[in-house]
Amino acid sequence: MKKSLHIAIIGCGSAGPVAGCLLARQGHQVEIFERAASQLPVGAGFMLQPSGMEVLDELGCLENTLVVTDRIDELLCKTAKDQVLLHLQYKEVGEQLFGAGTQRAAFLEVLLAQCAKDEVKVHWDSPVDDIRLENDKRIV
Image 1 (tube, rainbow, N blue to C red):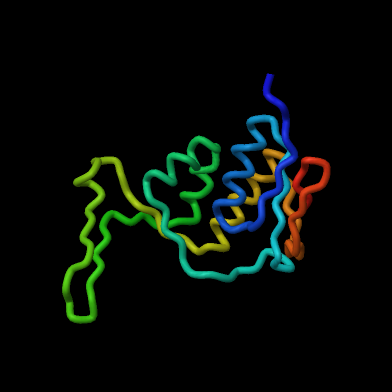
Image 2 (image 1 turned 45 degrees about the vertical axis):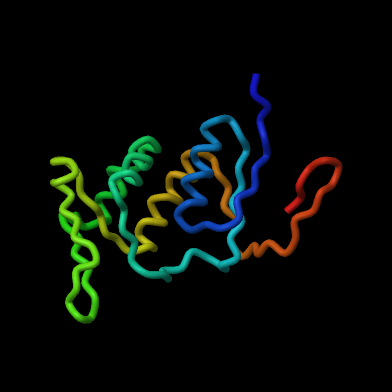
């Protein structure tokens, strides 16, 4: 029988909530600590690749994520001198594949809703100043 752990995740970007949900589903008690005072609409745009969408599908929140995204069928990146750095047409990799672009804040909304469903606690305005060892346990 696996031992249930009390796990602290530092940072509530995109990886923190996803990891938290996956760990909670394995029976662990998970808390996320974020230094930002509250959920704010900050940060750049966010682009999901097919592999990331597979994880969101496993979590059960892909459908809600796609509602706040725009489909991307092709990526073309060039230098200032018009030299092609990357030209990806998703259909060449797999007919059903595509990317999805969104605003970071909109994506975080979906992830936080999933955290609530999976009983992952999120602590805002909680910068981590120290992690210490106490009785064979790490204390955040």
